[in-house]
Length: 276
Ligand SMILES: *[C@@H]1O[C@H](CO)[C@@H](O)[C@H](O)[C@H]1NC(C)=O
Ligand SMILES: *[C@@H]1O[C@H](CO)[C@@H](O)[C@H](O)[C@H]1NC(C)=O
Image (cartoon, rainbow, N blue to C red; front, side, top):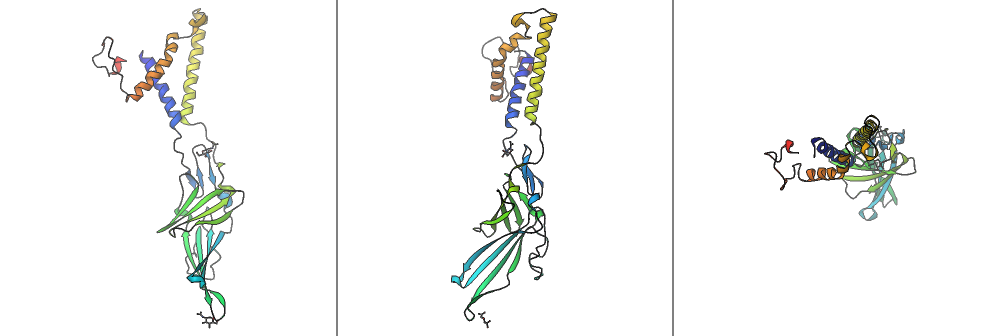
């Protein structure tokens, strides 16, 4: 095998490996507070779901054998922080600054005398701000960190413009909300060209074809070759399957040359480059 042929087979092998392995782990890279992008240029962009008002959802819970019930209201504003107007009458509570996630917990106690439930006015708790939020690597949720808790907003591609739901309250420190919106559907964020691997492959094979065409023309018209003879380096092309196989063997052997048992030893070190 000539040095050139050897280089050729190793190069070919590497190009194949690169083009296959570029996309093994696709992460939705954060491009903004509510935008992330996969390597192929598609991604999630919630910008259009950010309206003037908060998305809300409520849960009810009976406690103390029905003597008290708890009404929780969750407020969510994607993409940027807004101060909820709901608690302007109650300053000094947890949600009186710009934020993305807030919860209002209202407790209603049963009064035997009046036979009614009486609200205690409730408390507001800040649950997250845009600056402390991050996409999950699969782009399917945004995690709002508000130590020691965090809240996960699952992004669900749906028909609706935007609808908030409580998904799980199982872990009070890790509440999971779900946000159903058509803006959570995969969309084209940025036009991206081919991957590096496939570009290299295309350049490489273009060169090979150009070389072949040039070679055939030269041999045919300048040297007057006929039939199969017009193919430049014919012997090499016949050898190609073997060369590719050798490339594999070279890589599998940990990039050491296979030791050749039989045959004349022409070089003192069988692993040196010159022995190829
Ligand atoms: C782009 O990549 C994402 C994540 O790997 C995948 O879900 C999506 O189908 C891809 N889109 C196209 C058009 O290939
Ligand atoms: C129940 O309501 C009555 C009438 O408003 C009030 O006087 C009483 O203090 C209430 N009881 C409790 C336990 O809150």
